[in-house]
Amino acid sequence: MAKTLPSAPPSETTVVSGRKRTLREKIGTGPLFISIVFHLILVIVGFLWVFRIILPEEEKVDFMPASGGGGTPLSDSKANQHRVRMTQPNMARIAALGATSNLVLPDPDESSSIVSVGDMSSGGLAGGLGGSGTGGGKGTGDGKGIGAGFGSGLGTGGGMKNPFGMLTQDKDALVGTFYDLKQNKDGTPTGFQEKETLEAISQFVTRGNWNIRLLEKYYKAPNTLYQTKLYIPIMDAAEAPNAFGCGKDVQPVNWVALYRGYVTPPRSGKFRFVGRADNVLVIRFNSKVVLDGGDYSAGMARPIWDKGSIDLLAGRSGNRDAEKEARRGGYDLPVKSYDYSNAGQYNERGGLMAGKHFTVNQGQRYPVEILISELGGLFGASLMIEEDGVNYEKDSTGSPILPLFRLDQSQPAPSQESRGSPPYVLENATWKVVPGQMVDGI
Image: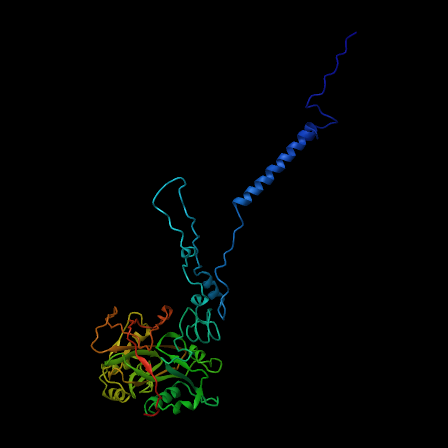
């Protein structure tokens, strides 16, 4: 009888109940399994903690508080692109321990703890036309007035100073008054279009001898502005009634603004005004019209930007009847004019016009009156002054770069030097406004 061999113990690969044993069954639920799970959890927690320290949450930088006023989303986005105030940390004092030296490092200066790179005032970050900013009056301009961005007065953004004048009374400025020739004094319509408006202006500056009563019968704006210079880039003509506080009541065409006062020159000499406007610019100095430099002639009551008129004023027409008309309109033929590299449409319309010479004595006062008007939809004007016998720097066109006719030391903002505005040179010697009651009709 054969011997029966004892069966071998089941191996690790022995099938139990028709399946393979799991890892948990192989390892068991004892201390080894618990230890492995615990250490795995520690590794995961440690990894997440270290990763959080290395990559902290990104901190958002607020460049600017929201600008006030009537700006557009475009102006707000532009404001966020401006500079932020940068700071330099206060550096610790450094010393070498155990070393001896006669050199002593100074204590850090408190002023070095913060270094300002730029000013964050919202006025300096004003947006474009109708933009944002700060102001001392109604609106969002950087200055004393109403509107949306001009400096001392009202504005149209871009940090631009108000070219139509300041609301705050200024003894060093001409007094500006605004009239709407489309309305009578009581607000009823006059029915004036371009032709009638130009005829009314011509009557005022010629036969009317600048008698203010001829304008007082029309609608008068509630605001009085104070003007120290005339340097207005070509812009929406609605900015004028907006400046004078009647934008809701006056359409931006067929209006007149008149600035008046007494001035005294910085020195005795012979001078002449040089200027241009779209549409009307007339200067009366010492009771005489010395410049009629707009695209429309107040003296002849008609437009003068066409080629025939340009040739006429330049003395090239050969038309004696037309020349007589021009002389009756107050022009001394040929009229001197200047082109400038950045004067745009003014060059195409005959250039900046040089007026008649006049002689002044230092210390003596002279009445000056400046009339501007718009008959279409865009307006711009610039007024310079040229002294006889002075050699000025030349533009690339060969024309002299002249000083602004200004009554204080302020100057236009860089953003105003556009769209027809000629170059200018700054001069310390300014004309001064002096007290005096204007006399009408002389």
